Length: 407
Image 1 (cartoon, rainbow, N blue to C red):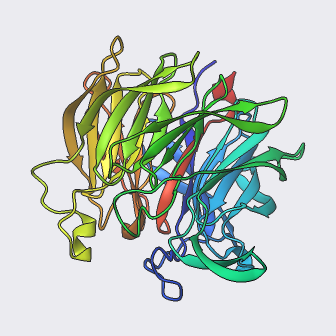
Image 2 (image 1 turned 120 degrees about the vertical axis):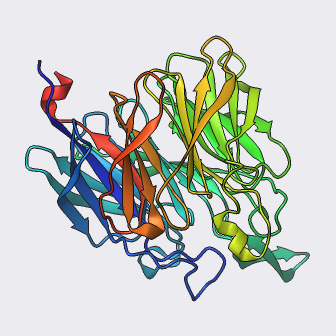
């Protein structure tokens, strides 16, 4: 069947973010909505179709396999003013009508909800709760005495059932991570920043706060996450975002604090990771990073990583506002840096995504109130900017496709 001349992208973004302060936001976000956009398949031009307002900081997204539903993580530490951390939201998608409709919302069972994903069936929602960086008091009774104990919010991954109507159902499991790292604030406790699952139900959880990577498996009988192993990364590396390379044993993980991208081999029998390569995605020609404004000469932090459908082109971004183009050697899993693309963004880029045909890469520019659409050269993987749609403090996007494209 002939392909459509368009497809869709749905964007989410930041509301106010309280990263190190309780009462004054570190970043004042303007996003309270999901924004559904039409993308011209030839030119990459983007136009807004619909917006679903009234959502708190819908900063990360996932689309159901049948494209009927979209889910977002509400990156809050005080969702709905109840003091229970972050939230998750379910919305119905009607691509023919180009319409979004709210289904329901739920507490995420953790703070600062920063990533959501679905299993292959769309029946299970996995939610990464970063946890806040604030202390709270708990009280223990020992030998009849009540004593206070200062702890950090728990970094955890929550597992939810999805209802028949696409809504968020029962909380099935809550996996609490552990570990500490190099920075007394950023790494004082576990902070999972993403969670990904493949078609074999293997689950990868990079724990930026603990300098480790958890390998789990979704147990469909018990409806729990079975912990298989924990890979200890380099001290101060802060693993952040992960992606599977389809039809290979490889997993790619972008470190936040040291800005390096690593490739791993997943041993499916043992449930363990073995590192293959580690490369710096920094562009040496670009001086400084967004976080040097904090008074420290820091290495640019890594953000996201995505793989082209051809399995060879890899793209990762960092706080230099740079998208690094790499190549993955299919026989060995070794990564090689090929090029750097400096985006026209302020402060930092955030999420990146590649459409399923591998034609376009879109990067969100959270502080610049826009995204940048790049055309991908199919021979070299080079990026050419083609459009810059305006959006409210965007952080993440996911692509959707008309029914005709799936026939």
